[in-house]
Length: 338
Image (tube, rainbow, N blue to C red; front, top):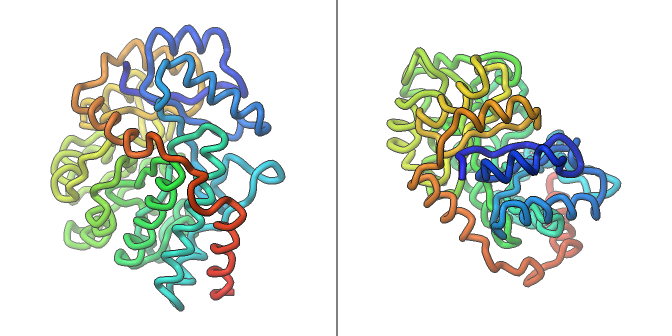
């Protein structure tokens, strides 16, 4: 197995993808809107990924946050609210907001589980800051670490109750960025003391099964390298100060915050301490470069991967509230803030 999660070109595996993935055995896969057209098609695709890998628990990821980040969209699948709405409800009724976030996360996971998707890139634990770039914006659960941690934990629990693993992101914090790492390399000049605010939700949820790094430079910790490429940030801050010991993946290698060949990017994040590299585009030449550069996944990374996926093995999502009941509960609670 190689320490990489790959995207796909289209709505079904191509023969050359099958050959490459069979030879390299990537740790997992991630799906995007380009890979999705309907219920039967999506289920066939996820089934084919499991069959190809030979692992019933192979991680199949998606970004299904709700709001403006949703790969599965109406009319085939329901729309889900943006995180900002739960933050607004928290102003009025904190416990209601926590329960609404939990119900919403379970609803998302019920939809994903039916489609054969077992990992969701949620929750964001980024602390929203005034005047920062809106790449986070209304995707954040708020500007107060305590409420972000409380609702973030509810999101993790809600998804796990329906057999879906959550990923906390973007560790160690993207909320202060004045640039979009998809397009540029952000630099956050805050002091180490100020950055304690950003770390707080991640420290509270350090036992989460998976986390995704931020392609951001924090000069207070490492002035030369972004977090995804920094042994200092990963070793001292993420593994040390935060105490995170779950599966750590990089953010997308294709973001313009990173430079160099894709093989260099992949080996760079793994050498820095990421357990796996994330490559989303589905570009075949880029994937070949990564496969040629990476070796086998490390023993500790494999242990973390297995441990993360074991948390949802055997969960029957139909035990408890079904989709209609759980979305009705969420909507009733969110109505308090209307």
